[in-house]
Image (cartoon, rainbow, N blue to C red):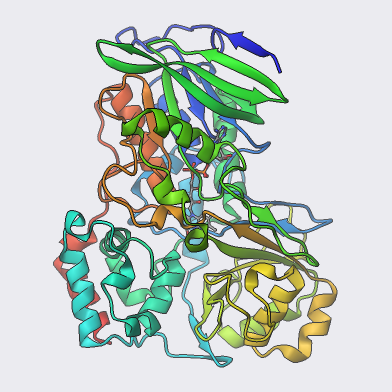
Length: 544
Ligand SMILES: Cc1cc2nc3c(=O)[nH]c(=O)nc-3n(C[C@H](O)[C@H](O)[C@H](O)COP(=O)(O)OP(=O)(O)OC[C@H]3O[C@@H](n4cnc5c(N)ncnc54)[C@H](O)[C@@H]3O)c2cc1C
């Protein structure tokens, strides 16, 4: 393979209309929401011309983990379905407030989401199920010791918690309480995850305690998040001339050293088996999305399970590892990608052509599609949950098709009904296990006839929750660097919660405002725990 050298991957060194700012071009590595948001803030708040911005994405599609694909003829797939709240997603809703909706003319995406949620209200009547029956999820089931441990973890400093795991803090019985079943499946925590991350979540979402059993605080997008968020954001960026270099895997970054510190001078990427090198000037900016929770994810089929990928697949971990091995201040990826057994789980997307399941589910839960949210089977060996979103879930979904999503936190366990590990199951077997938990056995042959279910294995899905210590994640703007920022889920942002779109957008705002010295505050972190009223009602819930 030869190497081509480009002075810059971007339209000529266009000068800015703001002469006080010296940058020329911005190179964004990774096409997830962290980069998309960075590009949007560079344009809106930094006045950077879109033509000076270039996003390198190794796959053929933008959006990264915020995916949604499929066709009416075949089936649909989402690796995940996202829950947001109005209060805690200050950065995300700031971004979406200036992006026009594609499906609600004249409205912003934020307005569209708010209006959708005012119309389709979340209020689960069936959050937890056991032995095929709904159980009273308003009873948290906490002991006095559990309550004290919850208060203690929220009050303990992050330095004191260090690399401790959640299971180091709580009694084994805590992990069998209704509170834990709801908390861990809403946010995807495992007992072996970082106590620091749980502490951050408890504080950030403390206002959800009184409504955790109804999920009434949850906000959703009208369609899947690719259609409802990624498409409008990329459309807005394209209209402003941002360049998207697709199927471009960034493999390395060269630095130069000067009196102000180290700065990027070259980016190497591979595209269609050709190696490219892009020159980066001292006043250019580089944003790196380091690591990805959906790296190496793989899909199965109705008749075959997915395979378990490794960190060697794709450029995400490889690039961060290469950077970290040369620069001690760029973090330690092994803290996150070094234990796939503890960071993987499996989700599935089903496309149904027969209305039977949705009807049965509506009768069982008391919720119409889109109003219930997660239904978790507490006696499921896989700790399986399923969500029936509002239909249609895809813009191009025909009326006679229904799409729903589910996942299991323990993919290495044998099913209660299908005597196989979840990770070894075909799409059909996942549906059978789910429908047996619901005691819909009699309808299974009919429902299976026209169903497609696609399993998705994600080896690193909870990697950002793995126990970590200071320095495992690079700062958004590492000290002593001139033109590089780390964005996404694996950079350090004090007090904010990973495994959220919010964290990625916050990293984008932080990087852009800091690079361009923009006199504007990053959207504030929501701190409900400073509100006595919220604290009081949350404590009351703990005694229920
Ligand atoms: C199953 C699931 C459920 C979720 N639930 C929620 C939820 O309820 N609420 C919520 O707020 N969030 C949720 N999230 C999290 C949210 O989707 C992510 O935090 C967010 O999308 C991450 O965006 P990102 O841009 O930081 O990274 P990513 O989306 O991972 O994007 C990184 C991109 O960079 C590309 N890339 C990486 N390395 C390279 C390279 N070397 N060269 C070129 N390209 C590269 C990758 O291909 C990828 O497209 C969920 C995610 C999943 C998967």
